[in-house]
Amino acid sequence: MPDDQPDLFGESLPRSPAASAPRPASSRTSTRAAFSASAHPSRPSAAQPLAARMRPRTLAEIVGQEHLTAPGALLPRLISSNRFGSLIFYGPPGCGKTSFAEVIARETGSRFVRINAVMSNVAELREILADARRLPETPTLLFIDELHRFNKSQQDLLLPDVEEGYIRLIGATTHNPGFYVNPPLLSRSHLFRLEPLSTAAIASVLRRALADTERGLGSHGVTASDAVLADLAVLCDGDLRRALNSLEVIVLSMPAAAAAAAEVTSDKDQVTGNTSADGAATAAAPTASQSAIRIPQSAFKEITPADLEAFARERRIRYDADEDEHYDTISVFIKSCRGSDPDAAMYWLAKMLAGGEDPRFIARRLVILASEDVGLADPLALPTAVAAHHACDFVGLPECEYALAHATLYIACANKSNSAATALFEAKRAVSGNTIQKVPLPFRDKGGQASKRAGHGKGYLYSHDFPENISGQDYLEKPLTLYTPKTLGMEARIAERLARWREMRAAIQAESKRKT
Image 1 (cartoon, rainbow, N blue to C red):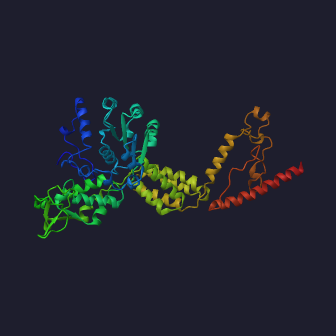
Image 2 (spheres, rainbow, N blue to C red):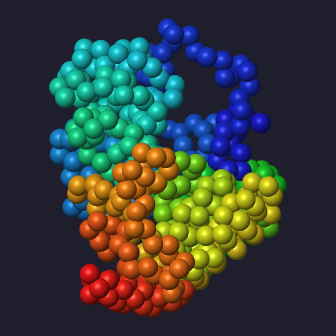
Image 3 (cartoon, rainbow, N blue to C red):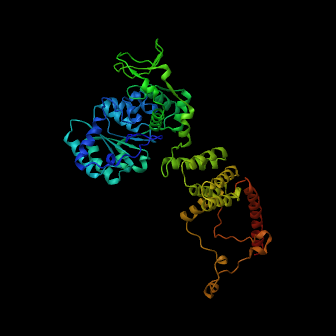
């Protein structure tokens, strides 16, 4: 198997020790030069993964990001005028960040230098910036993949040359730039968010890759129905790179009869993909100058749903441990429970579990939900959520998923009240925004002779000596109304009880004043 052969998920398999040996420092410049030249490739190498060979060459070839590439949008106007500073592309893996950078370099005729923040360091950055200053007549476009992996000092090192225009930075990151890119660098950049590709967009590229004999898999004589390509696109969850490399693995694992039967002809006509008069099918080619590849119709192989089964069993969804997918998904999960939608809540719970989320994190959020959003409307929500958290600790995965589902459904279907949260907020505001009230003497601790001589506890009325425990005393010097009960579930009964107690307290106080 070649060193760069992709596995079924589009990830490169480990290279041999010889292939992965580190380059000597003296070869660093030549490595960057290769990146620079790759912006204008004459012909893709057959050793490259399919995703690399099928990279878009023009802005028009980029699919699935129409909000960025549509005529009149900001990005095409910046590229057309060739008057832009720095750009930051932000989005999930396989959505086109690197493709945008290479297309921009090609269409602006820039000197393209590509580095990965994981592999780079300050010394290499200084060398790149020095080269850019020595070549002011040739615009240098510095593409930094995984920009979020640069620390603050490394990002700050870019600022002077970005400010002076010696380099134009294009950063690519899967992380939210607002958290990982320094504000000074962010303020000097145009930020473009890329979305996961739709199923239709991915399927269209897969179809083109099967027909393309120059860069794709057209010479293998493999076909697939629209339904199969759509299924593969769905399994790849918006990641075009993974979809293309998975397609390549599937095609290369099929019997080689089709490829062996291919005959490279000398005619230069455009290949149409239709069946010719002699009964041979021709696979589409992207250029008319390319030699046509004629494959007998009987030699074509078709990808079937069975070929996708192994991939489907090992499907990985797009999720991360502590970044946008993590926070966005827990956010919609919480809001689904708060909004009393058990179906949505269960869906997002399943996504988090499939993505490898820590079940204890989910359980902690359920405990918070039980008090913040259910509260006194259903007091059993809190012990149910706490029990689910305990189950995660002593049962563990996968069985603790049942406890999480139990607690999720209970909270989503329970009556809701945020009165505990609002009462706490009002109480904190009363404490922080006003003079702190003194504890009234009747309610102070009377332990010790000094406290007794000071009158602590004098006049206290024991609540259990009165009907419904209402003595009529005020426990604040200046009474406040901080808790307003809702009228759903159990809290409706609390609201009735409090109203009755207010009347009793007022009557007792009025009687006390009358006697005095």
